[in-house]
Image 1 (tube, rainbow, N blue to C red):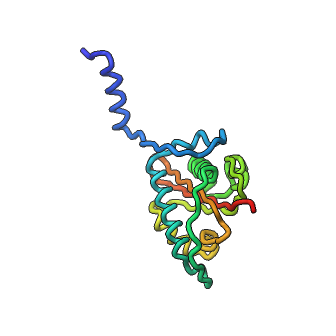
Image 2 (tube, rainbow, N blue to C red):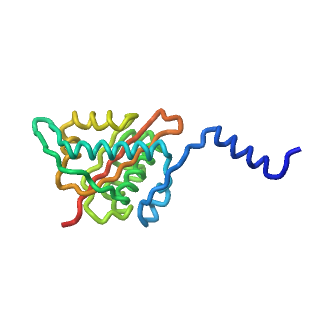
Image 3 (cartoon, rainbow, N blue to C red):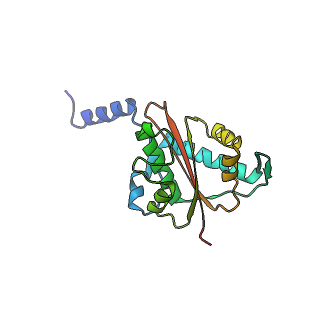
Length: 185
């Protein structure tokens, strides 16, 4: 005979064994829209952190973008609002595979609209997208081989960024979103 509380414990343990993803919390500001993405799957949050590190390293070192050598410009400050906007779009692209990897959201929103809705008070500048890269280092390497993406990452006028990574539960589809911005001067 089972004692009270044992079935509940069994259910919890069996749920963990059945693939409930661990989650990581982040402070993404006060915008109501961001309440749904402040708790994020740890595998994606870890990927976001790795991409932030890769971008910081690249911005410190500089790189050759096409025929232009861009010297180091320094790291960017993580913006909670841009992080929210990036996660919202990454999640939207995963939930709507028919969009593939597109700058327009399923609701017709643009990167600027998403940044504003997330409460970003600067000027949203670029949104970089990628699909199906597992490692952040491979993604940055691919962006370096595209002069426009490379220049966008190394833009000296930028001050902030937000990174979003989302994947299907099976891990067979991954989307990365980077939103950059600058302070109003």
